[in-house]
Image (cartoon, rainbow, N blue to C red):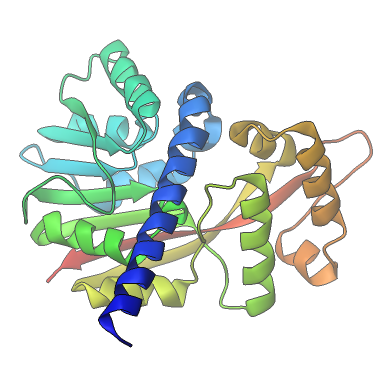
Length: 273
């Protein structure tokens, strides 16, 4: 491949990534207030598990990437010296900073930065966390590289995110379903992919837990601000997806009861070697 073609391809890749980032900022900017009160983000059991895996210490400086409304940063703040709550989206940061003030958490600092180009020096943080956000990153390998770069040697990395099984049919359906709901969705990854990403940047995985999260369909729609016409398409697509998908996602529809379904979730802890 000659240099002209290579430059052209790189330019197209960067353009696509920038378009995805703008979609993320638009999507989460308009939904920021909902994420402050969302029970899925504020009260999920994986939040306490994340804190336990970090094993926070009073001297720790922690970076929470794509903090959203700040729930992970708030959970860590009582145990550490300082938490940098970073995000690409200014309305989310405004929500996080306001909520930190309301909780008298003076050691939570909201900071605007791109997860794929973190504005911090190498080996700055004792721990880095990222919860329910990686599936929005346009370049996951670069984001993971940045997480490892800013983490101190022997530092803790904890990632919580939606994932998909190592199964082509389920992978394809779930990712298309998520993309239809939220255009800023990039991809949910398989456990095999996650372990590969972390191994590439020198993060030794010592804990990986797969679980399910049950979601009411109406809440899942509301958190993304889905318009009514697309809501009906999503509902139809879910309910007619076929026995294998319905079983895996544990889709439940009863008379006069809201639809619910399960999403796969992964929690990974690793140490920088």
